[in-house]
Length: 176
Image 1 (cartoon, rainbow, N blue to C red):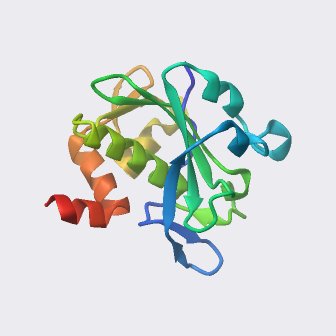
Image 2 (image 1 turned 60 degrees about the horizontal axis):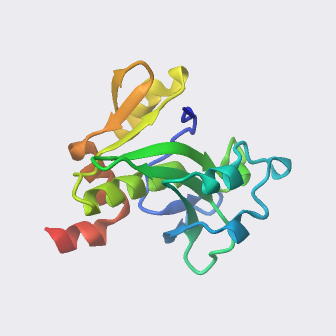
């Protein structure tokens, strides 16, 4: 079982350029094999996303800036487990990691999307994942995930709704 090891840098309402401070609207799209041509270990990606895309029952999504769908800001692999969504892997693009990252807010955006899918399916936003041990406290503080034993973590409805509201305010207003 993969272990989630992405650092949640900042919760935003889109993604934020670290130099200019500009908020850029994003979209999350399903990945196809052509999207992954440049997503390789040689280019700084840590996971085998092509292999992930081939797994049965798994859907891989990419976060992109609206109008610039060819540059992947981050990826998330999700599995629908009927009563919730499970995050297999989540990763920032290499240029969005570390002190010189270009954009903040990518992982929060991807977790919010997973919660949104779960909510839309009628599962109240429930999302689970397995964390690296050193990040358990971080996920509790940054996205409100609850440590439920071992390295398993769950984003429950209240926190899921908060993430959805943060990243999809127009969607939440239309449901209120």
